[in-house]
Image (cartoon, rainbow, N blue to C red; front, side, top):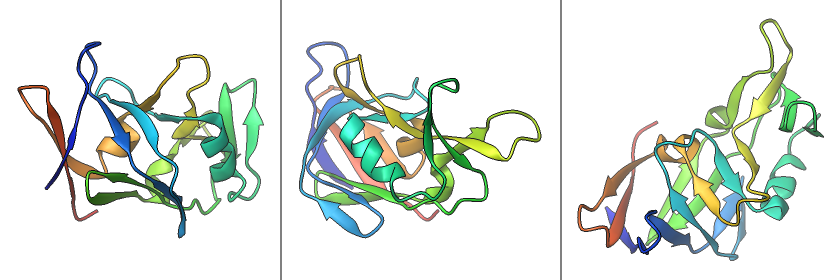
Length: 148
């Protein structure tokens, strides 16, 4: 278990992921955001989201669907982030959120842009890939890998 400090002054579990990776390509850019069990998706800066979906054959930013979609048969790369000293890896299969409609061959991505909200949200797409401890004192978050 690795712990990272949080800023809870605004009522959220705000922390900073020190780096991220799309597949095996690591970027040392930090992402500040909140860990939120009430949010389903992983909402990230638009530049990160665009970089992610450039790696997915057939992905498109579908305005009608409200975000990135791709053929359900597409192979999605993993997405990793560093929380404390632990690298949490979200398998591509977790990022295939759902089919657009019953019987559709297009799926909606679990990683989408945080545009307009001002911060990133590490929702269920990220949280289900790890063991996460929400410290009762609201001073730190614990992150650990788990067998997926």
